[in-house]
Image 1: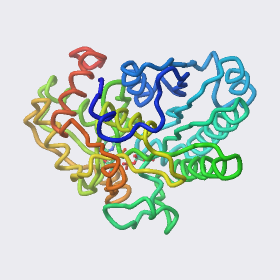
Image 2 (image 1 turned 90 degrees about the vertical axis):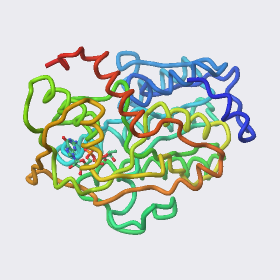
Image 3 (image 1 turned 180 degrees about the vertical axis):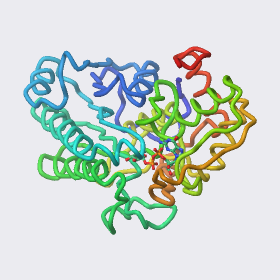
Length: 327
Ligand code: GFB
């Protein structure tokens, strides 16, 4: 979606016009949203799929960068998943994410990329961080155990960007999005995040006439959600105006309990049955609402309300999977 407003709201210090912009991870939910958003910028978009360059393989990434010479790089490539996937596959989450970020950042430096945006996640913050969480809370306490491996990899990415900035004088920055959802999400109930899981569960229960849906944990943890198109818009805004060593939070500024979220999703989907909790599944961190003060000061605000965002995600789910939900 085009956003003339962002260009007017703040001075564009880093115009994208005419630049060769590589979105690493363009097939993922965030990467695909960035590709949609960049269509309204006069830049040249570069993408590569896994056959063209496996980002966990250093030589393949270096060869691709040498052949394609990007000016700007956005690292949206990552191994991601919900609470159970994170908790079950810590080696994969740590190794894959470390390799991807190290390979892309080093290859970018080798071919002279001066501007790079690394994407992390709100799980980088300590489990008992003050709420809303300011950027300065990084590394002030122990991490949430269910996603420690992923968080450590993402913290390493922030530190890499800062180190390359300091040692090589490169304008590498990092942004930390909150829990995202929207078109292109993963709806596999074992590995997905909560939002796509709830959309699928409510849809299937409605279709099958079930009396209830089951959610994981107690339903009391609070989470902040942002539609991926709003996230992509914020990231392009950041890329145009932000240049500091410290990472920047990207969120909606509001959170709700998982129970409240479930009610809202059921309402949007049209499922009127009961909500049952499965407390054998983990809750994860009790709350992780990020402070959005820094992003607000750059003149950016989200456009979609949570309800409108869920309605858009549900429409995308139906379009991607059919009314039978692919089941
Ligand atoms: O979205 P989610 O998997 O990840 O879970 P996290 C959020 C909350 O929703 C947890 C609850 O309290 C879950 O127990 N929940 C309820 C469910 N029902 C379900 C369900 O059917 N599926 C899922 N997945 N959750 C991840 C991290 O944490 O968030 C990652 O593990 C990353 O590292 C990502 O930061 C954004 O918010 O707990």
